[in-house]
Structures are given as structure tokens and as C-alpha cells.
Length: 397
Image (tube, rainbow, N blue to C red; front, side):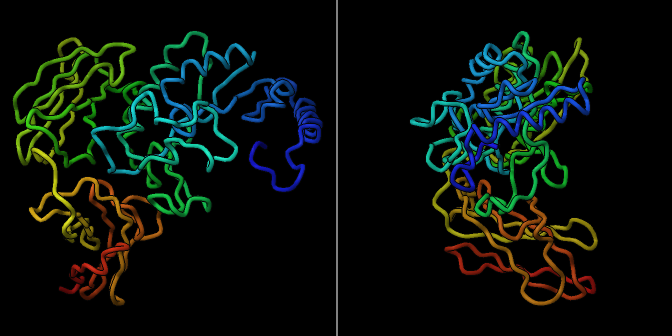
């Protein structure tokens, strides 16, 4: 009810409000005990029983550190208030050591409301790369506020699962709304584990992140965040303890479970134990390839294959520099093609490994391939790369 008008006068309050009043009356006649609700259409907030303004702190407008003030303002203004819709989009596998901070983008829209015409405002939604590192921070902040704010009735994140939409052809996965905590196959994205650290009834620990397998930085290492719902956690690097930390209420990120990790060059093994009353009740492990310094400029794409099951392979595309290091900032839109008529790409599913058109994430993309009877050739392209090829065996080989 609060988008741009489809026709002249289509958004006139003096037309919409009487109709809204009529609808509200019809509902009350059918069920006088159920509350009626409305979101975002401000001229009609007092016609229904409960109202939610648009609050997208840190995504469509403003910064996520404005969330508490926005909730407090709404609680004062609207007698019955429930916050519907918050969150943001994330592209699986895309990470950064320097996500947008709690203060938001410089010169971005100050208001946390979703603008009617989003094209004319600067926001994280429109002017960032949708990395998972930022979304993890945003949800941690939002949950910390909503779980501790006195008298706050509650909120609903939008949306639990990625879904198809005709409105998003240029998204990292085309035509997919990527605000889900899980992908379209139900596989958890990073944000899922933030919610689990607040709400799971079973003990859990998760190292951020299982798709952040290649990192780079100074010899002193990088911060690693661990999300647990246990009272304490102990992190290990290559078998050596980096110390035990106590989870602190109302501290973000992750209740203070952040360690400075002195990665060694090359392969590293992280392991965390979550503890309650000195007993290990949860654990997680992550392998990380670390480059001291920074990768060089993009040089080539390396295509490899691995077995998924007896009838399916995974095609891996990795952007590398001349020394063979992954180029972590490589984010070109990638295209996979099956050359010939044997086997088929698993495509058009809108998931990270079942999309033949997808943006690279930290220099990596992959797609599943169902084997044919005979060998097949897979081609990889971008706007600037006119063809890289790998052969996949057939079932009869």
C-alpha cells in the first residue's frame, strides 16, 4: 500500500483510508477478537489495532546502531507496536575483514525507514557487495537490542529462506531475494548461526565462517569471531590454546567471543570448545588457508572438479594471481556452460552451487554437474574471460 503509485492519484490517503476502514470493519465483523494489523502505511496506523512502521536500520536506510532508538520511538508513538521486517541480503561465501561498521555508510540516508523510491538514496542495500560479514554483525546487533529492550513486544526477520523474485535480475544470484537465513535448499547461511547462538536450546558453537576458508593479512593475524550459546568458549589454533573466554551479555559481537589469531602462512586448523560448568558441550572446527600480506592482481581462473556422488561432480572456479594465491576481492559475474550433449549442469535453482550465472564470492564459484554416459566439457566465462575449460568424465569411463 505504500509503494510508488501505479496511476495518478493511486496513493491518495482520502481514497485509501475509507477503503482500509471498510476492510477493518469486515474483519472485525467476522472475528471481533483477532487483532488487525498493518505495516508501513502511516496514514492508516490508527485504523487497525497494531502497527509496524518501516524500520530497516542498516540496510535500506541509516545504520544498525540506530535500531534501539527507532524501536523506542515507535513504542512511544504506537500504542500497539510489533516490528515487522528487518534484516538484509547476503551472498554465500563473500566475506571481508572490513565490513561496514555500526555507524553505517558515510553520506547514507539517515532515516532507518525504507524509502518509497530506493533508487534515489544511498544505502547498504544499494551500495555494498552484500557480504556475509556485515549481515552477521547486523543481526547480532539487532538481536542484542530486541532481546534486552524492556517492554518490546517482538519482531520478525524477513525472510527465513531465500526466494525467487522477478524484480532482482542483477542480484549476485539473479532473480533471487537473498535475505534468507538459509538458501533455497535450506542450507544455513552465516546469519543462521547468529540466531542459533541466541535461541538454540541445544548447546552450539560456530566459527565465523565455514565458507571463509581463505583469508589474508598481517603476520600478527586476524580477529576470529565465534558464536556460542555456552557460558564459555576456548579457541585453539593448530592444537594450541588461544585462551578461554566468558560470554558477556549485551556485548557485540558474539558476547565478546573474539580472538586475535596468529595464523601461520598456508594451512591452519581452528577448533573451538563451548563449555558449561567446565564441561565441553559443543565444538566446531574450521580449516583456513592464510596468506601473510595480500594477494596479487588477478592472473587466471583455475577450474577443477570433485566428486559429489557417483552420478554428480562439483565444478570449482577459483580466481588466482600469478603466484597461485586466491584473489579474494575478485567478484566478477561468472557463467558456466556445458559444451556438448552429455550430462547437464544443475542450474536455475537459485542456490550457490546450482546457478550457472552467479557472482564470484571471494574469488570462488562452483556448480554441480550431473554426469552423462560420456565425457563432457565445461566452459567458464566472465565479461572479460572468453573461455576456460575443464573435462568431466562420463559414467561409462
